[in-house]
Image 1 (cartoon, rainbow, N blue to C red):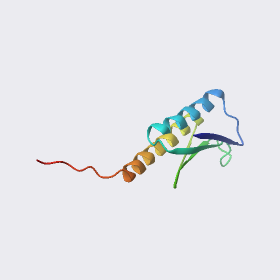
Image 2 (cartoon, rainbow, N blue to C red; image 1 turned 90 degrees about the vertical axis):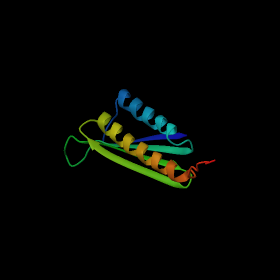
Image 3 (cartoon, rainbow, N blue to C red; image 1 turned 135 degrees about the horizontal axis):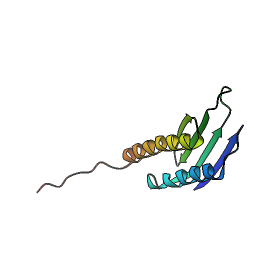
Image 4 (cartoon, rainbow, N blue to C red; image 1 turned 180 degrees about the vertical axis):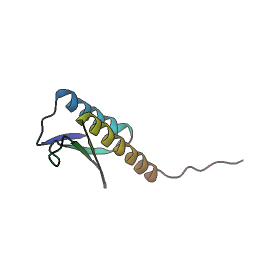
Length: 104
């Protein structure tokens, strides 16, 4: 899995960068065929002190995107990662065949 980070109008602390990387690595738990994760951070939104985190997850045949804005990067990372995890669970559920019961 490739992991790429982009910063726009901001700098991340080492703690924030590690949190973003751990969240991206945690996505593997929900879907094993992840090819690439892009994390985009923006710290200059409408002249306010809001911070944005956007994850783009590339899976063979699918692209999942989630974005969140919060008053700190850590909150934005956590919320965007939670949105990605929900989408990965839903995608994996759709791709698996339905279970059948054996009655006898």
